[in-house]
Length: 265
Ligand SMILES: Nc1ncnc2c1ncn2[C@@H]1O[C@H](COP(=O)(O)OP(=O)(O)O)[C@@H](O)[C@H]1O
Ligand SMILES: [Mg+2]
Image (cartoon, rainbow, N blue to C red):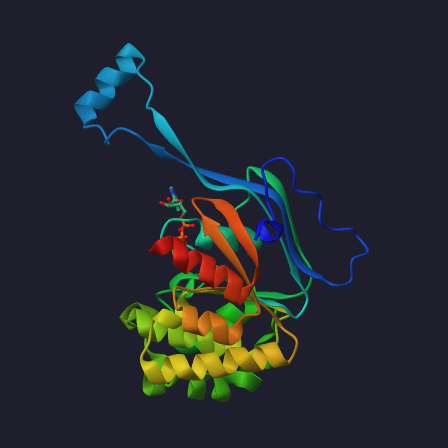
């Protein structure tokens, strides 16, 4: 089993040569920390007193990722598993360049589509239809290209006439359906999926799984975060177990899931 451990602090090699054609995503010694204030928010009076006495707010550092090195090849589907708070979403946000790591290097080759928390990138005041154009433009697609796909997106989303209502009236499930419908109309090289399939009814989840498998077959690279081990087994060939911010295990998906489940008992 030790051969599967990809990251020991300080020993991770620089895993990418610049001429490496097989590469889709590489993290090299990536660390991320968040700072949160230790104290509660002061009242105005306390705030003024603190200013007078020169008190400084204390912050706690929390390492969400520690020295993570991980390589994902083109066409690979990797399942990222671990307990709540382990750092899985942080890892995808680093790949999506929503977060800049404190240390380390992130490389991404190809067009990327992040399907992260509830429709990040959407505008609440715009309608679903307008958000399709907005999302498309964020991803570098022209209005004409989005217009050509409009019908298939709306059909996939099953939103019907709600497509012309403002997004703030949507449930979280409806947002995810819209996000996934847009994604499914595109042809990204790399797809990032963070637990979005957990939202929505069974029929829609099934439809998304089918679509993700089609992405796979067309050679798309997939980074897939989920707590649903059956889905991970179905979609992914490799797995990465994140444990309290560290890459605990990286290897064939069955071995990684088995080790993770053993540790849960
Ligand atoms: N914006 C933030 N500010 C402070 N702490 C955060 C923030 N986002 C995440 N964290 C903390 O970082 C850790 C990893 O979070 P996350 O990546 O969301 O884990 P996971 O997706 O595996 O549940 C958690 O302890 C979480 O509380
Ligand atoms: Mg998460």
